Length: 111
Image (cartoon, rainbow, N blue to C red; front, side, top):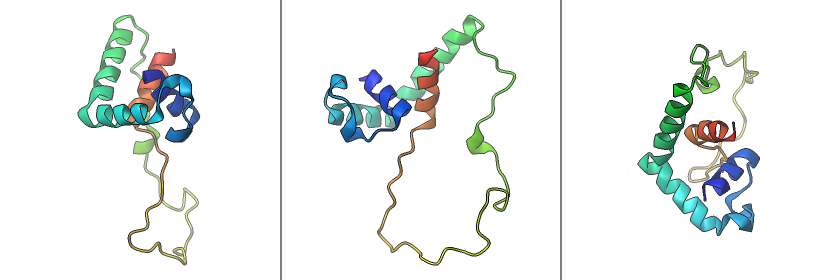
């Protein structure tokens, strides 16, 4: 199950396209959602980091999370005028963002 979630983090595939070797995609998805909600992924990341820190494999001097770096909108190439069309109320865009905690955990487990 964990390998299925890590596979999705690495490849970015849709849940329904998860290879069968990881089990039913619904099971992997539901457990991932439950573990994200109840803090299990955060706890696993903390334990992996503590174990790696204990043996000196983590350099804490430099740690930059790009999601926290702010830049002016023009520095990011934003348009000067707002877009012409505004999405209708009730229409949601599908996002395929992965939980940042899970991405960190996946990186630590692959080392």
